[in-house]
Length: 353
Image 1 (tube, rainbow, N blue to C red):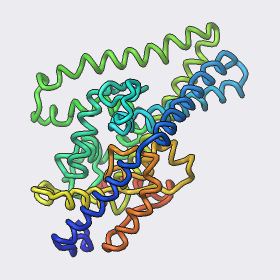
Image 2 (image 1 turned 180 degrees about the horizontal axis):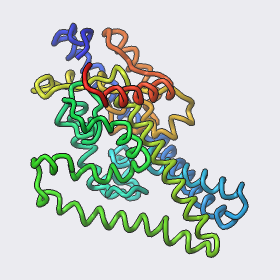
Image 3 (image 1 turned 90 degrees about the vertical axis):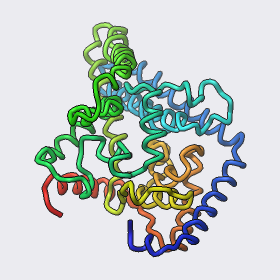
């Protein structure tokens, strides 16, 4: 934990928690029509982009139409994944009582089954954020992203593993719950993961059948072009999601904690851990929407069940609180944060500090 954070005494940390609880209560009490309109509008734009992309690919022989189709599908998939799926499954819109936006039943355009993601992400990650050996998102069981992870020759492949994870991100997220590294180490048996396999295979078959068989076949002789377009759109979505998520969790300054440091946490201490272990990305309003407002990762980790489009306004108050308590508020441009992550991935491939 940072020297600055360690300088806070118990009473100051609890006062910090009370202030953040108050902010949460005020925003939660203000939810209403504007929030419902926002998510409905995003869903409408996402559907428009998907239909537009599919229609344009019927003229995929014409390069501008093919490029337009890819761009529209990529935006559709990014919105579905980032601003709709991720946030809806966090329960951000459960208060609306809309069956289409119910966190417990929502499924997204990703091969990872929603039910498995809700466990590995909503519970494991958001409860044990950045706690080494508890938060499975620390390295995703594949990468070394902190010096607190003991070096092993396996990590010489860090850059290669990261590149593969970026390209096939949705499959990495799907396999995340299997905890393959623990199976290899003998810490988990196949009997533990067997119940997860059938839902994974069904979801993968459904997604692959739609994008790589059904839609290409519907365009007849243009099937190869449509198939290439769908693959490209999925790769663009994967690269984007990887970049946003890694920039929010692993740039320089984002801290990792031990189980001992986080034992018997109070509410204030939990808030403090979320703030120190997260990072934001600066950008335009459109950039924030396309990131699912995970460009405000600090606010998301503090308030994961509040509608994400509220984060930009909440960020000003959170930053002011950090400054008042002498706490770091890690934020920077996409190029700065992503560059920091890439350097860390290469640096930690090697032993030593």
